Length: 505
Image (cartoon, rainbow, N blue to C red; front, side, top):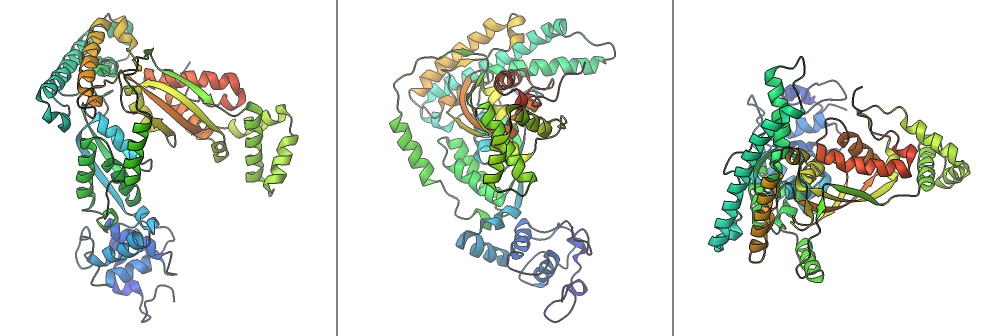
């Protein structure tokens, strides 16, 4: 009988579940005050047991081997050997990775370089991050990472340190110059307090001055991930060419293992990733490449579906979702629609979108590929706030040009800005010739990175809506305004509702 153990006794009579579940009599309830691996065990049992989560929890709590503090108040104790054995069997032994989906860890990570933070954030798309923002906070002098690869080259290490110190000096001078200039361009509004006004002007100055800071600059972030995503993240970091990222992986493994130890067993560098990278680097090895000085953000579509083909594919998907039709029937019906009818169908699927909505899932079937040459500052925003974009990208470089913030030029500060970048680039070349793993840390936020991206129209709607809004930072806004303009020119109805956060009149 439901709610009984093998002896016919109610589980609730033997174990007080109220400390671990949010209710005892509803079909939806939260589970808490338990180690993450124990929760994962409870969820995993459901695939092989007809009992409810609460019944399985009661059985586990009644088991003396499962040390979760049944007789003690407060947070449950450490994970047990039984949980470990369960995970050894189903996760490690049988590859039942769905178990790892339900064990979650929250990790604070401090004082890592912007280069390492990007590698971490790109390692697995299922993790969630919140990162220190250089748009809102002022970095501290001396807060930069020194690559350990430079220890064997004292002269280059000294040069690396000197360049980073000069970058901060330039940052401070830019901040001062911008704080003098910006009030002339952005006067205080009638009802704005002095404090609010200074904060607004300071934020703009932060946004622009940070373009001279290098990727060695330290950052902090918070990470939340489930066991499977975290395990895959560590494997990617352990396979990184950068010692900092490999050390970060081991530090994360040590701390995550305090919460979900079994799920991180046997984490090691991925031989496939390492050998493939080595083979491709040999295959595509180049002598010294010429500069390719693109200025400002550049973005364009490399491929997009033909307009009418896209509308027919969308109509087919919508017919399948709304009618009991086979694919052949839906496709044949979509092929009979005129161009005007197809546009009307697309319009009906989009017209009710509000600024905070995402389009329905059928828009995921339309795929687009884009080329973007954008600043590192722009790239770091893009990689954090996409939903499901697939990126190909190289190591940070100095050969693809720079973005100079317009306010820096307008304030007459570009000469100072350019002088610092010239010194950075000379240092980059000197270090790259001896210690190529360390050189990317000298790339600044203004230097460009080449990106190749594949997205669905669903994802494009998210990115365009978010990144062309009045609140968006100017650099990434310019990038997506270019893409929106091209989309409107080629697919007018499909582009019509992409930008929904419009400036107020």
